[in-house]
Amino acid sequence: MEEKLVYSDILRTAWKGLISQFWLLVGLIIGFTIVYSLLYIFSLPAKGESMTTSGIIISLLCWLLLSLFQLGYMKNCFQTLDGEEPQFSSYGQVSRKLFSYLVASIIFTLIIAIGIVLLVVPGIYLALRLQFFFASMVDENTGIIESFKRSWEITKGHTMKLFIIMLIMTLISITGELALLAGIFVAIPLIVLMYGYIFRGLTAPAAS
Image (cartoon, rainbow, N blue to C red; front, side, top):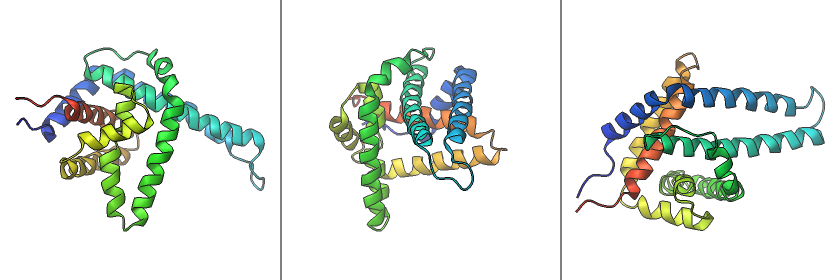
C-alpha cells in the first residue's frame, strides 16, 4: 500500500506551492493582518471604560471577518495545490459556509477543551482526529456533522504521524516568529498549504 503521509513530500509540495504564488499568498496574510489589527484596536475600550455596544459589534465583526478569511484563504491554498492561480472570488463562494464553519469551530473548540481537561492527552488526540473538518467543509462542501465524521474517518491509523507533523508545523511557526516576526507571514501560508496537501493525501483513493 502506498504511504499517504511522507514528510519530505508534504514539505516539498507545500514549499513549491508557496513559491509559485508567493506574493499573492503572503500579501493576503499581510493585508488581512493590517485590516484585522485596525478593527481590533477600534474595538478596545478607552482606559478606565467598559466595553461599549459599538466595541462589541466591532469585535463580532472581527470574528466574522477572520472566519471568512480563513475559509477563503483555505480555498486559495487548495487552488494553489491544484496548480491554479488563487481567485479573490473564492471569498464570496465560501461565504455561504460561514455559519456552518462558525458553529463547527465552536464545537471543535469545546471538544478539545473538554479533552484537555481530561489530562491533556485526550484533547491532543481529538484535535488530531477532528482537525480536517475545516478542510472537508472547504474542499468537499460537507456539513457540520459530516465534516467531523469525514475527518475522523480519514485520520484513522495516522494519529502518530499527524502528531509529528503537528510538531513540525509548530517548529515552522516558532521559526517564523523568531525571524523578526516577518517570517510568520511566510510560515502561515506554508503551514496552510501543508495542511491542505495532507488532507488531499488522506482523502486520495488508495493505490492498488
